[in-house]
Amino acid sequence: MAPPSLNLNLVARDIAWTQVSGGGAWAFNCDWAGGSADIGNARIPGEQCGDKCATTKDCTHFTWTNTNGGTCWLKSGAVTASQAFGKTNDQAVCGYIKSTAATAPVGIKWNYAADGSYWSPSCDWNGQDFAKSSVRGSQCSQECIKTAGCTHYTWTNLNGGTCWMKNGNVTPSAAFATTKDGAVCGAVSGTPAKSTTGQPKTTTAKPPQTTNNQPPKTTSQPPKTTNQLPQTTNKPTTTKAAPVTTQPSSPGKTITSAWAAAPASATRFPYIECDKTNTCYQRNTFLIPAWQNIASTIQESGDMSFGLGRFYLVDPAGSTYKQFYLNNRQITFNVDVAGVKCGQNSALYFSAMPVGLGSQYCDGQGSCMEMDIFEGNVAATQFTTHECKSRGQVNGNQCNHNGCSDTSNTKYSSQVGPKSFIDTTRPFKITTKFITSDNTDSGTLSSIVQVFEQDGKTFQTGNVNTGTCTAEWGGVPQMGKGMADGMTLILSFWEGGMDWLDGGFGNPKCASAVGQSQPAKYSKIRVEPIA
Image 1 (cartoon, rainbow, N blue to C red):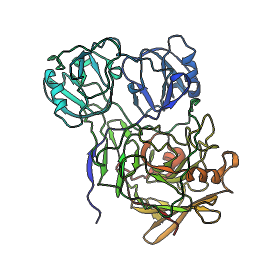
Image 2 (tube, one colour):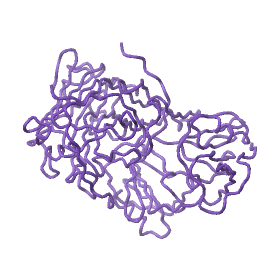
Image 3 (tube, helix red, strand yellow):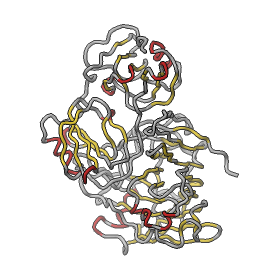
């Protein structure tokens, strides 16, 4: 019997910024919180939005959405990347021309204490809540200090006074000015770093007592989108790693952000609590210790729904992302997508992202190779290669964004689906084999074969090989070169625009879908020699 799952609430997620020349950056599925003023808009494709901002007087940052067929919203004001938040409902892309908020935002007057802590009235931080307490404003900083993991906080007059405790590295420039709900924000001793303007004053770090709702905290897992913005500064790299003979996925740690160090335990994550409105959300993850049973989940609140962020597997020491070398190997795992409905995508995949913790996320939609082992829900599954013309991180349009999947998509297959030959309402096993030309670790990757197994029955979903993938991007052999350099294992959950995966409600499987926005569960994940 499988060990019981541990039910934890999860907030942490990352926005995958792509840096561009001049100090700016852009990312999929995000928008700006607080302190931004729209100065105009234009109906243009997403890839033109950054240039439009750069050539518009006073424009410092922007958001593109699919409103009216595609609208670029031009914004002005001091901004840093930390003020962006994730959103999924309109395929948003956000970016900034350069970081313009090296100092505290206008209207925030920090009060510093000798121990390095600081606070100010009329301000807030974006997201990162993990606990709350009903206390007076003058008690909020001390409440944060005595709460393990709390680095900064916001107090509001909600319910007579609520201290919202937060976790993560922040600077004064990350706060935004607001008078909503009598907000007071601050950071406790040890939170980097002090403002670059003016000398800190030696005062008490205790905020004044103040006297209804906490500003919404809206971070959510982005879906992928095809509106590509320019990429100009990611330098190509060359990496190498010696082939290994066996790679069972030994216990490691999971990390929920590409920008942060691994947590001390795979089961300690912050949480966020909901209010009573339909714009509120709550996300959970279900974990047991180490690396045996990972589940991602999505929950709906009112008329809005949000997905879980990514998980990354790091080495047991928590020093680097654990690297897998897939040529002449197979990956096997059990998966249960019975509760993942149409329009949602639970994915297990590999990325050739840099190995150092805190390095930038990348995938085949942007600037490095990606191997999608499994993207699926109760109605459909698919595996796909996303090879790039060069190894490492690349510039410009060098990656196969659409990917090569041959016949691997099962949305219209009578063999895979609810109550089918492979019944997706129950757990099943997936084996994906990476076969080389000479059956050695150093051989050229020639084909990728995937087989589903359930109750002793097997079904081959596809065979991606040199004859089925276009040579424009280098095909399967080029994908093998990326694998030879080592890849990071990632689990994710996202939604929005999934007709390419499941066919939407024109697919009878979706019309009768049994998915109920429950966890997608993975277990017994192994990378090993081909059987």
